[in-house]
Image 1 (tube, rainbow, N blue to C red):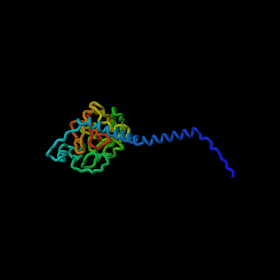
Image 2: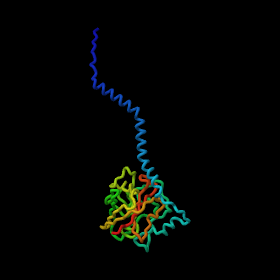
Image 3: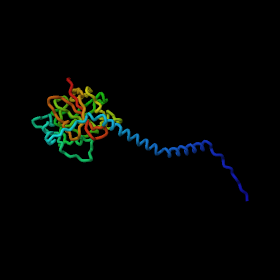
Length: 264
């Protein structure tokens, strides 16, 4: 019987080196994978938690102290004049803090931000249904404000029944906010994320019915969803109110910017 032996060809050194390098890489990756995942998770947690914690540490002086009163809040709200500015002889109560909201809330809708007693209404004697708002400091340029709408992902919203810009009273404008690191002045989901950073003297420009009004910021404070007096209409001054949720990225409280009309 005859046996034939064939000698194997020598392996390709480059292929062996590649296989060895891949084996070493996969081994190191398997050892480091838990550490990588812990690092990524901690980074995500810090990126979300740090802005909220920082906001809470610096915002304590902006939270209004609650006043204890023996008078029911609903009666106080009506007595303070949370009314439609269009026809004072036939007032509309805009809000009532006695309502109870659900635990699952869609906060892209203005109607869920406070405990309103009834839906918004568009009572303006003009035909204007929307206008634009600009805040130079925050790079917000000609953002659309719709009067009486409810979808904050589509535009800013002026609460229907509050005064129009330029009038005696207080137009109240709502805008959505998210974490500051995702701020985009052209995206209505994040457009009001930085309004808590506005300072007295900053400008808010409103173009309503072909006329540009300049409002000057004079105050910032925070309220709870029960404090609906931010809708109050005072007919001896021309104010503007901007509202968003704070800390940005949460729905715990409402941040309020107050501005006053500058002389034209």
